Image 1 (cartoon, rainbow, N blue to C red):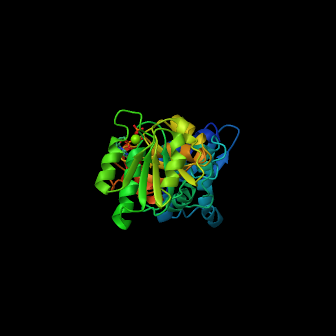
Image 2: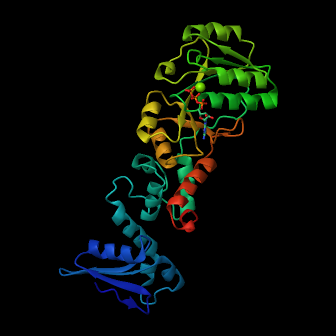
Image 3: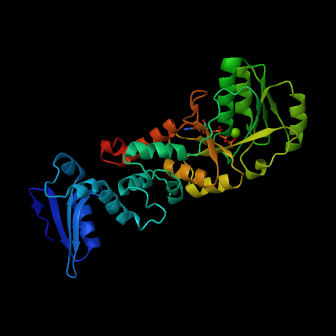
Length: 338
Ligand SMILES: Nc1nc2c(ncn2[C@@H]2O[C@H](COP(=O)(O)OP(=O)(O)OP(=O)(O)O)[C@@H](O)[C@H]2O)c(=O)[nH]1
Ligand SMILES: [Mg+2]
């Protein structure tokens, strides 16, 4: 390889048997954001003159025609696209940003939906990413409605109910809230709720079956806010009562992506309480699954503390967790700052 530096233009010269190999050399030497200043192809070889972005910005190459310099950014896109072309549907993204989104765990289907065709820096990509996150934040202090927590065993259903009930009691007192639990068959299934009910001074009732739910809701018609707890299991996904019921699907960010997807897919555009955000495996991956399966994240559980470790879902929180995960796997602080 000939890799001589042009002192005038601060450009480096790369020669290879074809353009693709030459671009590979550029990328290896200068990174994916290298600026292609000139390229020549003949039957025997391909030549590329390239520069790192900072060098070109600081030292404009005097022997490069002005229109070529104006096209420098386009060239950068061309180089990036060369590496994107192998990922159909993602050609609109600069390779560097595509790579970063992938390392954050976002899958192709999610990244395709990020509307950042005209983004020229990471802040703009990030703004578009925020718009794509599957969020439907619900207030931390609920005042009315019937909310039923469903999800697999041990995902954080009961904790979420206690956190929400406590937040309500702190602001509005205990009178208008009640908790019903269908988790009455397991040994100590409703113990935690009964204790929380005592502490918060709110009405907690154990129900022996789903059939007991409608009569209980009628009896508690004077309560503005009612939570229903269920034991883990898919059979509770379909609770029919003659009252408007909001089902909240509780999913831990620690579950495998296939499990997350299958849980969300079983329901029609479910509202998701994403728990265990204090110990996520790969949050980008998890969010991608929820997005792909049509779910929306409404609450974020960030630990076991009651009531502090529950927040309304927000892009800021999710992105800060993803970025700190990325930092842990990346040497460079600049990774999330550029
Ligand atoms: N680290 C962490 N722990 C949590 C979180 N949410 C709940 N937990 C803990 O996870 C355990 C299970 O939480 P529960 O609320 O009992 O879960 P559940 O879905 O009601 O469980 P079952 O009723 O057994 O199906 C408890 O020890 C909680 O303190 C969270 O966001 N982060
Ligand atoms: Mg429970």
